[in-house]
Image (cartoon, rainbow, N blue to C red; front, side, top):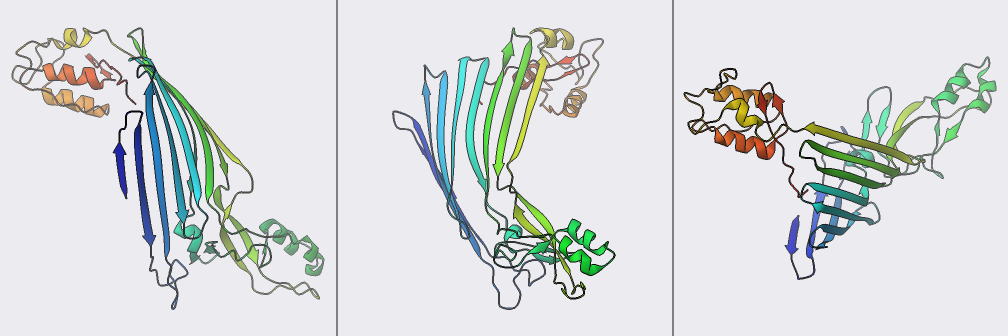
Amino acid sequence: MGEYRFKPSFAEITVGGSGRMYRPNTAGTIFKDTADVVITNWEVGGYVGVEKKVLGEKLRVAATLRVDKNENFKEQYSPAISAVWMPKPEHVIRISASRAVRNPTLADQYLYYNVGRAILLGNIEGQFEEGNDSLITLESFNDYRNTPSLLEGLPKLDYFNVDRIRPEKVITLETGYRGTLWEKFYLDLSAYTSWYTDFIGYLIGIDGSFDEGNGFRSPLQVYRVAANSTQEVRTQGREHRVELLPPEDHLQRELQLQPTGFRGGRSDHPRVQYTAEQVQYRLHRARHAYPVDRQTGSGLRHQLQIRGGVCLRRLAAVHRPDPEL
């Protein structure tokens, strides 16, 4: 894996690539590597990205293209484009569109694991695709065995095929806003929607044969086969975060931070009697663990003001969002 960035006069360019080689050895306990069968699988990928700032660096536009190749599948292309607009340092608006690919895992391709009630099967060989074998749906098999005569139940059996596994593709649109309003409210809003094709999952079916003369069946085997969805799958979501920011002088007023700061490791404020260690512990409980300067205490205000986001009792933190994403 490697990456290189260079900055010509017109933009910033990033190029990189990666590669992997898989050689599992399960001796047939999980994968189909029994006897003299050796499983190997390699994949490589490369990408290039261009980023440019325009309009006095208020608008940042980026475009990338990635190409991936797995030993068992055709090369897949993943383009993406994004834009970040900062009309002011305290306001950031972003929008992006991208296409991504997920190759089937080793388990999706080579799994062969008998769990007793069924065999979990990878599907790189297409054992049950059209032209090879087929499976019976569980529902139709229940209808078959619930008929008064097994011979009468044969027409109820519903057979289906499972195409060999393919890479999963997704297209995603995302937009968001982050900033401070009236120096009192910090907002972080985002929303996305994604469309999946060839979504990777599994299908369950029964393999077996039936005597057309009397309707009796031969020994049956249930399989859970890795498979792609034949329908488009759509997901969407949003995230909203709103914080009320205390006044600029709130922390100074409540903690009474003087040049001497925490005398003997304790605040001078008569109503806020927390040691420096207790202050850090309470902030850590709120997932904001910041170091406390035991000598002056001024570092506490500085750290909280930059990182911000919590208000515990009379301890306040003022958030100033970083204009960069």
